[in-house]
Image 1 (spheres, rainbow, N blue to C red):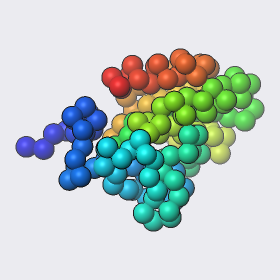
Image 2: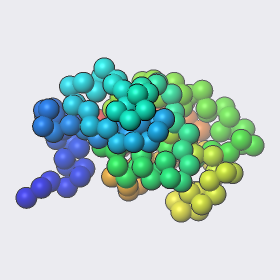
Image 3: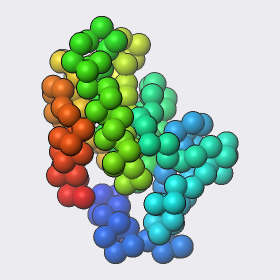
Length: 164
């Protein structure tokens, strides 16, 4: 019997993936799925399709299509900042979220969704206040936190919510 996706992900990170059991990492540039051996995850790697770096140490801007690719196809937890350009707390939190990306990659993917442009995504997930940070794994939301946070709090919260 095959393990559930979350269990498979956890076992890959806890017990270490072998060459025959790589992690799926979605490219932040072309959004193609890439198989990366877990022992090579820290080295970053490049996309097999576009040859871009798989990790840049900064959040990825997502639209509807790229959101679905990252949330549904990647083995990495996706930490999303739902924000808007007119939101003062969102603008204040942006540098902290970028700093958290540097700390959490390559075990997490951090992304930003502009709720002014991607109103469908905001409605789909019932985003009522911004900034709101949500964590997705295997296409499902597993945690949510409304309000601005500093980088240390974002890192701590993400790790706590995913038992990482």
